[in-house]
Image (cartoon, rainbow, N blue to C red; front, side, top):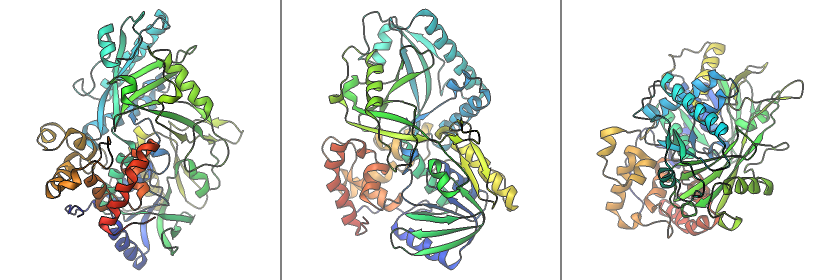
Length: 519
């Protein structure tokens, strides 16, 4: 039997989608339409709804379908931007990291140690530069008012400590390591889903599988990709938050993306890695690759930065050269080299770069921009996952000013996402830690489902730490409409093809239980 989870204003499912579409058809005039269901778009929808504006968010596929699920899952403090003198974006990143850790999503974001092993290839001058950079990161943390209890100070660690954090690092010539701290998401797609559900709880209408066929500054023509039906919505402001697809909505914008690639390994390949293993690229003093402990007993290895011209694919693919680069770089720090045979999966995401009039590229993938077309369509582009909230605030501020909307000031620095819990309240939740990391205070609902029906406590496939109750919860509360939604975004099982194949029958069974399968 399907689990009987309690309903709430943050519940998104097929039944609510139908009801919301009916209501929208009866009253298709709103304050704000947001196009795009990634981290920026859901952030805009939450901000606008929390200000009292009648808000509609539409996404032609699923939440986090694009770039928002292909990140490194890191919540950066802005350290790397100091090297190029971008103090403003560095400070903004550190501030937003602190808001995520303290208020917005303390259940989804955790402190993560970052380790640079001091091997013979790292000379004294380079280690001094890294240490100075970490000290600057400490200064950013202090300026952002993030306590040392949340993110400890950087320090040098002995060789034994370095090996405890990263057991597969080379021992010969190891002089210890340099350690700093940053933030890490349990999963980027889960952050996006939590944002969408919180926006719904504040009154936003949130619709996936709705394609914005055409958009201007005051109207959007929508097509339901499940039924083919069309609807025109009138709006006082329209915000284009479609990331690398922004040019398809506003044809005056030209983007030239770059690709960031990651490889997926079993955690055993890194011997129980408990820090972000950070390895300098040979011959560079400012480029690194990272091996990151991740959900489902995995490690993600990244990151590349390659020009990616041409049509924008739904799922970018790593190149052979990028795979070789990542393996070659990480192997400079490992006792036993990793090979292609160790790779369990791979993924790539695209960063938006704005093409300028002189045919150069302006990297606004970090410093975001809010643009307005001649017909009033507002586009927010660039930025990064960590600063999504500030991007959303700036986009809604622009919409309010342009359309003279009757809105209250931004409130999102003080709004916790659905499930947010920390401290003693978190300690009191009677649920396994892995559930609390994914669902926060809602973890108890998963446990209740297990108790009501022990079959729902069974893993969806052998060796996978996701249970049938979690699939049920994704369908009843998290707007999962297809098997792909369950495997590729509500969980990240799909990042490993063999795991995806093994878990597919359980995903099919979950929809059968709810008699709501949509393919």
